Length: 72
Image (tube, rainbow, N blue to C red; front, side):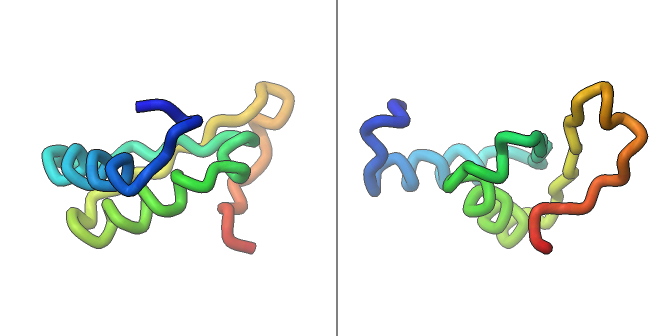
C-alpha cells in the first residue's frame, strides 16, 4: 500500500487485516500526532477487539516525563 495513493480500498484492507489480529500495540511518538490514520486505527481496533496496548515512545531526554495522551 502506498501512502501517496490512499483510497477506500486502503481502508478496507486495513479493516480486514485488523480483524485478523488478536491485539494492537499502539506506539505513540512525537510524530504520531500528525498521523491521520493512527487515531482511526486505534478507534476501529478498540471497537472490534477491545485489546489495545498504548506504548509511548519518547526521546531519552524526556524519559522521566509522564505520558499525557493525545487528547488534551
